[in-house]
Structures are given as C-alpha cells and as structure tokens.
Length: 245
Image (cartoon, rainbow, N blue to C red):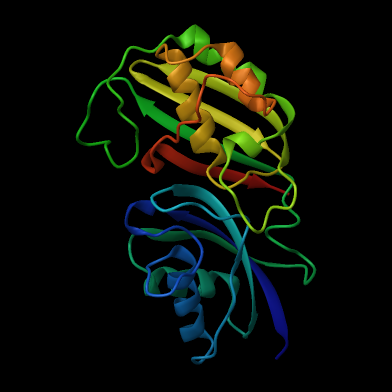
C-alpha cells in the first residue's frame, strides 16, 4: 500500500463546537474528524487540514479539508465510514482522491461566506440566524457593502491572529439580499481574517440602525480614526458556504 491524499467536503452545525481547530479539552470539528480518521488508520493519528478555521458557533455547508491515509479502502467506503463514526452534527458529502501536492488551505482561490439575519424573531431558526429586532436602513447596508469590494487592509475589522502576517484581502463580491423577512449578506474573497465577516456584518448593522454613517464605516476600512467602533455580529448566523480551487 502507498499513502494517498484525500479531499473531503464537510457540512457541520457549529452550535455545539468550539470552532474548527483542535483545542485541548474542547469539542472541535477537526478533533472529532481526526479521531474518526484515526480509527480508520488502526489507531494511528491522522492530521486533517481545513481550507480555513471557523469560530465557535459558526456553521459550514462546504468546508474543504485534506488528509493522508495508507489504505486500500475506496473513497466511498471512507466517506461512509467517517459518517458512521461521526456525530450527526457533521456530515461528509464527498470524498475523493487528489494530487499529493493538493493543499486545502493554500490552494484555495475563493471562499464564500453567507450571513443570515432575520428581521423578526423565530424560535425554529434561532440557531442559524441573528435576530436583532431593530429597524434597519437597507439602503445604508447596500452602500456599506459596496465599500467592502476590492482590496483592503482589514486590520480594523478583524481580530489579531498570530497566523496572518498580512491583513490585506481581496473581496470580489459583497452584497445584501432581502427575501421576505430575511436579510442575507454574501461575501466572496481570496482569504478572510479571524472574525472579519462577523465584524463587517455587525458594523454595517450599526450603521444601518443609525449608530454611525457610511463615511464612518469607510474610515474603518481605511484604518482611519473615526467615530464608529467595530461591532462583532453573533456567530450563529454565519456559514462557510463554499470554497473554490
């Protein structure tokens, strides 16, 4: 047998996870999947590399990860075995053998996140939406979203991270779409920083409820001094939607 590299597409409900990255004495998506992979590997540890980290409480529909495994099992058998060994808040949609040089994180070209905001309370969707119960000026939201397009240094709209040497990201798409009482924010970029999407959403909502102006928001994007302080939206409305290579 020879070691092969596998790429998997993962959906998970982040409600009961402390994020993606393995942590000591905490339940994380990476930890649960690596433990399941270790069972497939006769108890030997297997490292799983994701396309990016998600915060505690954040969900994913299309997280991509890779791992190396010395096995004769088919990709479909691996997929079914992982789904059988993992809890029901994780599901592997696809498993495929890939090039040994493939890297889930470094090879990713575009990542799409969607944030779901509900304009009226709902018990059923409370785990997957932010329900701020406030009057929101949608025109101001649209204007702020336009400012996000292009290349920016997001130092003022992200949390410090030891991994991110550069704070510059290129945003290809940034838009709010209303569907009845739901407001969805979609953002597509080459990379994202720690809590960047949640801080963008929360701060745009602050402007849209009269706590600042679009010019204040733009000043934050330009890392200039202003009257608007960043606000971080809660995690449950955020989804890692898909990753493109």
